[in-house]
Length: 76
Image 1 (tube, helix red, strand yellow):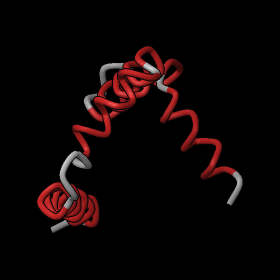
Image 2 (spheres, one colour):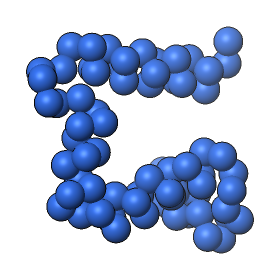
Image 3 (tube, helix red, strand yellow):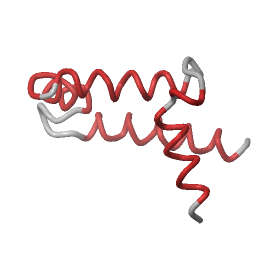
């Protein structure tokens, strides 16, 4: 298994574990519902940016996460 595969497994495991152990009303989806009530456009933009990045739907010059990581790696 490649490091990225292990990272995805760890991320998915963490999400499932958090939701199983969360207090009532505190799951990640319920948190997102709260964000949608108070900051609907920001929540949608962030979600779209993540999906666009992970699914390679955006050209690199319009992919905010790609640009952020490119800058972060350059500064190391």
